[in-house]
Image (cartoon, protein in one colour):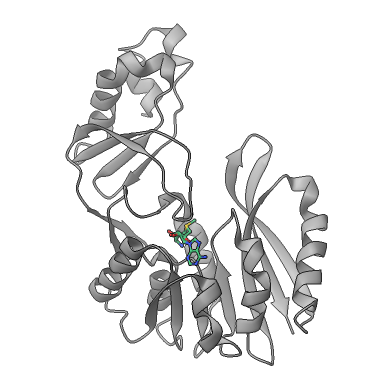
Length: 275
Ligand SMILES: C[S@@+](CC[C@H](N)C(=O)[O-])C[C@H]1O[C@@H](n2cnc3c(N)ncnc32)[C@H](O)[C@@H]1O
């Protein structure tokens, strides 16, 4: 039974239409959008969520869109207490405080897709690494990976990444790096076989940097971005020009849809093979 069905008994039809069915569960925390029209129904929504997920300890309603460099949103506590949580996906654990660190459980399958592509002895650069979910997914799925350099600018996310590397026993593979990718990537130039760029709003600025991280013989960049489906050719062209400007060549591009983001806007990942 989904949230709408559970609320059918408590809310009249004219109110139900405002309910957005989707919400996120991150460990023992749920985050839901409650439209203005349903603000007086907060208690009913909390009760329905607890019926669906009795182990929830904390429920937040969204107070804003994601914003700022750290990609965080304002959250309003509507049930329980503010505390860190531990999320499990595909056999690894991610510990974090959702009010201080970006995390999206909706990208679990995308993390697995990337992890499955990594070959033994590859060195991987994960830019915008957050609390480490991409890096840990890679280290867990491909235990013969070389190093997974993982750069994050938010000190809270970096602190959790260190913790997550420890609790997932990935310390010999994942190398957490605190800082702005613009400032800290130089030591990794020419050292990586693969660069993952999970910053859909803004990764574009760092494409040249990603190309420089690849080994001389080439490698793959996983470039995330938001777009309408009809702009993909244009984006491919722009990205290719950028990569060529640092003396590299684009050999092949494969684009996959990751998720819906907004009406007419999707999140995509371009897997760019570079020579
Ligand atoms: C969309 S989140 C993705 C986090 C993580 N990869 C995940 O999937 O949970 C982007 C992350 O990039 C970090 N970030 C933004 N700009 C950055 C920069 N210039 N250098 C390093 N990290 C950055 C933010 O703090 C945020 O944690």
